[in-house]
Structure formats: C-alpha cells, structure tokens
Length: 256
Length: 234
Ligand SMILES: Nc1ncnc2c1ncn2[C@@H]1O[C@H](COP(=O)(O)OP(=O)(O)OP(=O)(O)O)[C@@H](O)[C@H]1O
Ligand SMILES: Nc1ncnc2c1ncn2[C@@H]1O[C@H](COP(=O)(O)OP(=O)(O)OP(=O)(O)O)[C@@H](O)[C@H]1O
Ligand SMILES: [Mg+2]
Ligand SMILES: [Mg+2]
Image (cartoon, rainbow over all chains, first blue to last red):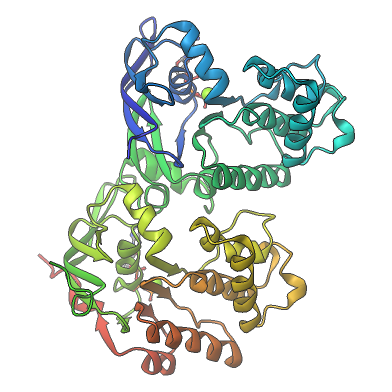
C-alpha cells in the first residue's frame, strides 16, 4: 500500500529559532496520527508545513495525489497546491474564527467550499450543506444564521462540516477540541471518530489532551524543542513511554 | 511453512522487559527475561504468579502496548515485538482480542455501539453488528434500557460486562483476558466462563489472568508461572 503522506526531513526555522526540524513519518490511508508536546515544541509549525500554509526550509511532503500519484507538495506549483488544499485536504483550526467566514451564513460557509471546487447548482449545494449541517448536528433551521450567533462548540462543528463537505482524504486539525467544555468535546470526539471510520479519512491531529489522542489517534508523535522525541502506537507511547519527556508528560496527568 | 493445525497461534520466545524510569534517577528495573509461551487453537493458558510477578506486563507485551526489550512475540502470524504500529493495529482489528481490566470509551457513545464497534470497524453491516452486540449484552444481563446510554456512568461491574461483551463481539483467533470474572456475581461469572468455553470450542487460543482459582481450573488447560521469568539478581 502507498502511504497517503510521506514526510521526509521537514525543517522550519524562524530566523535563528527552530520551529521544527528533522521530522519524518509515513501516514497510511485511514490512519489517524496524534501530535502532542509542550507549548512551543513546534506542533503548529509542523502542521502548517504539512498543509502547505508554511514553506519548510528543508524536506519533502509527498502526497499521493489522485491524478499523478505521489508528488512533493513543497515544490509543486502554487495553483496546484491550492487546488489540493480545496479538494483533498481539510484544515480544522483551533479557533473556528480562523476557519470560518463569520459574515456568511452557516449554509453559505459550507456551500462556499463546494463552489470553490466547481459546484454551480444552487439546489444541490443547498441540499449538501443541509446534509452536512445535519451530520454535525446543527439543526436545519439554523442554516441561514451567521456563525457569530453560534456557540463555540457549534462553530467548531460548522468548521468541520465546511471542511469535510468536499470529501477530503486528509484532515489536519490543530487543537480541534481546545477551548470547549468537556461535554462538547465529547460530542465532537464522537463525531470525528464516526467520520474517520465511515469516510476512511486520514488525519493528523495536534492536541495537548492525552485523553483525546488515546481515543482518536492510532499513532502518536511526541515533540519537544522542535524535535520528535518519540513515536509509536498511541497506547504504547502512553502506557510504556520510553523518552524522559514523554514519561514526564504522561505522569503529570491524573489518568488517561 | 506454517501449519495452522499444529503451529501455535501465540508463540513467545526469549521475551524480556525492562522499565527505565528517567524521572526517578534513571532507575532501570528488569522485570522479565527469557519468557516462553505457546498457545494452540482451542487452548486456554492461565498466567499465574505473585502480585508484581509480571502477569499483566506479559499480557500487555502481547497486546503491544508495552514494548518488549528482546524476543519474539508471534500472534496469528505477526511478530508484535518487531511489527510496525499499523501491523499491530491490523492484528488487533481482526485477529487479536483483549478484555482489559477497565473500559475506556468515547463519552456519549451508546453502550450498544461501544460493543458493536469492533465489528463495524471490520465492515460488518450495522444491523448484523448491532444484533450480535444486543445478544451479548442480553446474555451478560445488561438491562435493555441501558443500551442506548453511554457506559461511562455505569457501575464497575456493569462496565466490566460491557467490556467483556465488546471483547467477545468479534470471534478472534487469539484472545487475551485480564481478570474477566473479577467482581462479577455468580450468574454473570457463569455467563463469562460459558463465553470462554464457546470461544475455545470454535478454536480461539486464549491467555487469561484469573485470581478466581475455581474459574481458572475450569477453563484453563494449563498454567504458566511468570515468576519463572523473573530475572536472576546479577
Ligand atoms: N511566526 C513566528 N515567528 C517567529 N517564531 C515563531 C513563529 N511561530 C512560531 N514560532 C516559534 O517556533 C516555535 C514553535 O512554535 P509552534 O507554534 O509551532 O509551537 P506549538 O507546539 O504549536 O505550541 P502551542 O502548543 O503553544 O500551540 C516556538 O519557539 C515559537 O515561538
Ligand atoms: N508502566 C510501568 N512502569 C514501570 N514499572 C511497571 C510498569 N508496569 C508494570 N511495572 C512493574 O512491573 C512489575 C510487574 O507488574 P505487573 O503489573 O505485570 O504484575 P502482575 O503480575 O500483573 O501483578 P498483579 O497480580 O498485582 O496484577 C511490577 O514490579 C511493576 O511495578
Ligand atoms: Mg500550536
Ligand atoms: Mg496484573
């Protein structure tokens, strides 16, 4: 089987400061990888490099495209990368305001993504939007409301609907359940799990919440100071951590 | 060549385990060496040994959430000691089941779905998966009115039975059971022992930890004392 994503030696510096360095891994179709690590360890930087939001200083991000097979997205032409970002990738931001258009209705937020990939039939766009709002448990009578009128948890679910409506194969998420209260997090987790299973999505999820990764991620990568210090099966890394930093991380939470 | 009739389903050789506690003066704790074990189809082997001898540790190395320091851990064709994470995940999906001591689930997911999930992941149609889950929950005496609720608020004994139902939902060729009868009443204990006997009858290779001696002698064909694998003091 060809990996969906092959990451090779990614490095990103901000001047003299290291964002992340020497990151390599393969992600296979249907796999969910979690990234954990302390604040400033380079998680968001890495995710931005993978999703094409930041240009890495070194390394390759090889994505298995539908048309041409594995292609390095770092060196591909900008329009081609933008097309991938609209069709095959999704990016769920920690703050829904970064991933939504706050002045556009909920239905419009979802429909807009479809139009960006060429959908033109208004009726079809509206019914897809309705379908996806239903899947993320937003009532049909809220379709014309603006996200500003939604709670944080609803905004986050709307962001997920907006991202998934185009049927991406790879989803990047930066702290998707951060800033939400525990019961809302649980709903979102349940939703994400179901979507990953039914749609066969692959995902890379950054979070500081070890309980979230245990339930959502197949594999785990632990970062510190821009470096990956440990990787493995999620429950193995959490139950039998090998690196000093991971041991500290795991022992400093009550129970995961 | 492997022979499914005579080759063991689970086969361990030279398995060792050491814990290094980096944040406690880098203490190195050897807990096991030279562990050997073979379990054939239709057989149940009990792990015995004093508390702290390493029964759970050995079971976790087979499941793959503890890393083996050395040796071979062949389970239904996969060497867990050397396999890539995704190979271990594939093993767990179809060939290796585990009833751990505690239930861990996504909050809010109904009990029926928690039990059906291992089947859904394998692509079993929803109706069939739910029917199998319902059958197991009924046998384990979880009242039907609880099936639509998340097990997170259930009693300890109820959670354990949900965990057992989930572990037996898919008929795996290899099965690990960590204290499956602990804290169950007589009727449910009987049901669980029945499930284990049925699994053996259909050819599952089972490793179990049972503090309940009567249960152990009823379902285990033989026992292995993990104290035999305790490293000799240097
Ligand atoms: N735009 C930037 N300019 C300069 N330095 C930056 C920039 N963005 C990030 N950094 C630095 O790069 C390092 C990694 O930051 P990054 O945001 O990737 O961390 P993180 O792991 O996502 O942290 P958090 O958990 O707090 O979100 C930090 O030292 C940070 O200060
Ligand atoms: N994650 C861990 N980190 C450090 N040491 C561990 C870890 N897990 C187990 N150990 C140690 O390994 C040894 C074996 O423990 P294990 O839990 O396997 O024993 P057991 O035979 O299952 O005991 P019990 O009957 O009490 O459940 C013990 O000394 C224990 O402290
Ligand atoms: Mg960040
Ligand atoms: Mg134990």
